[in-house]
Length: 450
Image 1 (cartoon, helix red, strand yellow):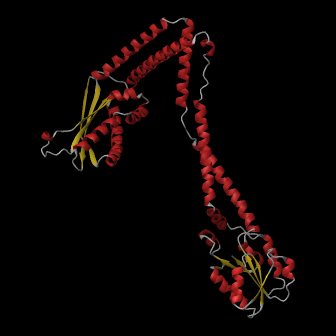
Image 2 (tube, rainbow, N blue to C red):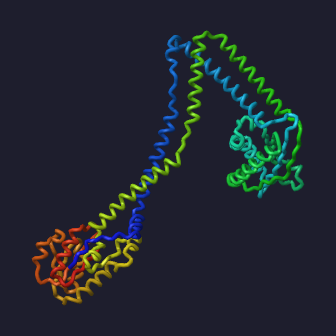
Image 3 (spheres, rainbow, N blue to C red):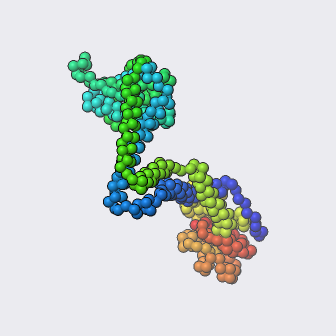
């Protein structure tokens, strides 16, 4: 017999094999995600660790009580400075939109909220929820991001009110609808339309959420109005902002006048450290780089594929009993009981039978060269069931030693025409080599996967 030494790898078989290892692929992906999140979280935590300037040397000149008082003063001054910064930002935002206080565009949008089933309590709750959402940062953030302004400014140019009619005002004496009014104070028509679009999208999303959480309803724009004229409210807010800045600067100046140089130096350094920490914390956003995440994920999946490819190649050469038929030209019966769908499709061109069918096929093949009562050599693993079956069919069964394919014991058995070799998925290359030796003097040999 000529033993084939070449080894063929089919791409289809490799794909099937990799797909059959989906559990380890899932594990590799989970490990990659854990590494990605762990690395990102570490960077986030590191960014929040602020390397403060040490006030220790300056603070040593004061007692514990004096330091406590100075810290309180510093925090008060810092609070006023933040207030000044907020007012200055509001004034800057107003000027950035080019407002003409004598010609402000005032838009009024009236929405009708209608319930499918009349319920005054649900209607009031719906209107309150809409009003609360439209006055929250959820909406303000959308405008702020669009114009790069502060939420304080947005809250001054958008106003909301609700109205629920009384029973006497409703002809049907049933309260099933109410009004939601939105006022927008814009510098020009373009800004007004921009805010209108943002509000409409926001209301549509809120409508879906509130229909599920409170009651089924519809909300429709029933009226819109535009008037151009003076805006005393916005101008009043500007005047109030200037006055607040002036007042807070005066208060800070008075507080500094009561301190000596060393105390002022300590307070300024304390405030600088606090501002540094606030800025660092703001910058320390938990963020995952898509590029780095993709590299890590591809790396883990690549290592997984490489490992299983190597395992497939060497495992196929040295551990796969299914290749015995190709390599040695030996008739092989494959049992499918332990093969899942992927593995079965991998060998769909071979003879695959269940265990009972394999027994019948074995008897048919042996009967071609043997008579009842002839001896059959049975070697390999898990021999009991096959041995019992062959004995029932009238064959004399000679079992080899428990050591798989002990060449000395097998070759010493002369006059045996047929041999049955039992393999399983863990059988190694030695099994194939010893099986090939049996072919030298045996007329029939059958390899069975059990």
